[in-house]
Amino acid sequence: MSAWKSAGISYLQYANIAARALRNTLKDELKAPAQIRNNNNLKFQKWEKGVSSEQVNYILLSVQNYSYSFS
Image (tube, rainbow, N blue to C red):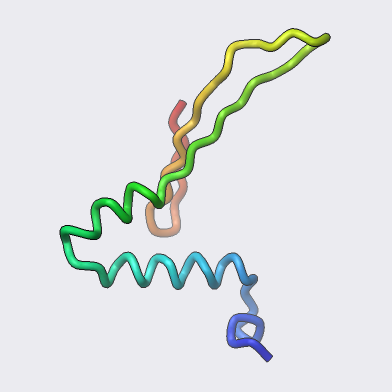
């Protein structure tokens, strides 16, 4: 059985933990670019009757076990 299964977590949670551990071990000059790649962007646009509304861009920041969303 896989270690992540026996730990009772999903593969996605395991991958996130491994990625966070790797980013934490990087040297300072490599840590900042890696942290930027950790952020996610989300674009949302509502369509009604074939017409689109204004597009809203969200930046999703993940800090340790907390998530923040800015629009």
